[in-house]
Amino acid sequence: MRGARQAIRPVPRLGWLLVAAGLHLLSGCKGPQRVLATEGPAARELADLWWVLIWSTGLPAVLTIGVIVAAVLRARRADKQVEPPSRGEESFILGVGGVLTLLILIGLLFASIRAGNATVRPPSEPAVTVHVTGHQFWWEVTYPEYGVVDANELYLPAGQPVRVVLSSGDVIHSFWVPQLHGKMDMLPGRTHQTWLLADRPGVYRGQCAEFCGIQHALMAFSVEAEPPEAFAARMARMREAARARAGRAGMPGEAVFVQAGCGLCHAVGPRPREGATGTPGPDLTHLASRRTLAAGTLPNTRDALREWILRPQAIKPGSRMPPTPLAPEQLEALLDYLETLD
Ligand code: CUA
Image (cartoon, rainbow, N blue to C red; front, side):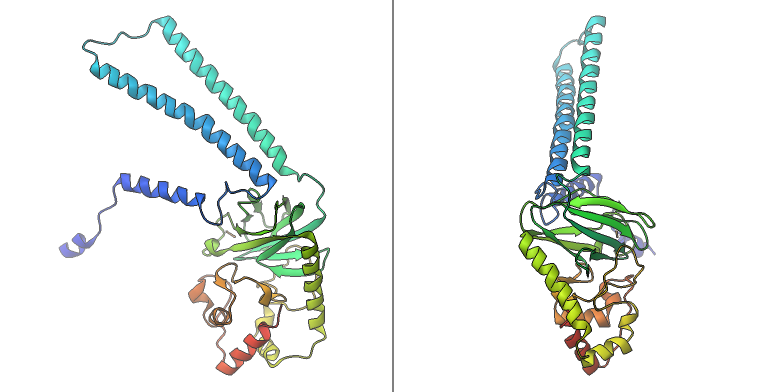
């Protein structure tokens, strides 16, 4: 009993906890989710507001602490008691402090109203609409104008605003692409709108920003902005690929897909639809063209896909993908089939 007690580690000191918390906050400055490395007008507005907040609150805080420290040091050094301020001096100090605080707060109010107005509406009418539905723990993405259904990846024409219609198939999620815009919640039974505009072609990381269950942290997506012609060509190619698949002779792996029950949760084929559908699993029509599997969890390779089919609960415990035990030759046939889905 005594030995067991001694084995318990001492709680880290508060100082270390604060250092750890500080370092953790600094992690937002690097990596693919840095909010200050903006790549679009909305994110720029928010970053500017962030700087205004930091300076207008940080500077007075540092000045106040500096004055207090100076006063304490002076009082320590003084041989005799320091004279307290007169009534008039006291009123002056309080008056200046009150007026400055009020001015800063009013300034912040206007700055946040300005940023709010600038981020709520895109600079011009969006030419493209994307529907994004949050599911535990993945993203359904549909382009109604193009008849394309996809998951966990979003494509945009660079330099053009895109309307993003948000909904949820189960619980509350939050749509967030830190380098392009602020967060927008996705509530079950409701539809919200936001917009994205990427200045230039590039790949940006998106992440669910509302705790939605055990795999909230592994609910990521990517946003790829490409030249408008390339975006249009991609949409046309995706729609054609889905159409062509409908008439193609079945591969052996397709039968495995049906027999193993994959098709109960996953759709494959030309199936344009909008908004929340309650589909348990992602549409696999364009699975092979995706960067990642399981919403940003695994690289999209044959080995990773094999592992994901066999042991999803070891990779993403609590996700709704059940393990699918298959004989090796069946599994390889299924993988052959899935690799054709681009
Ligand atoms: Cu979805 Cu957190």
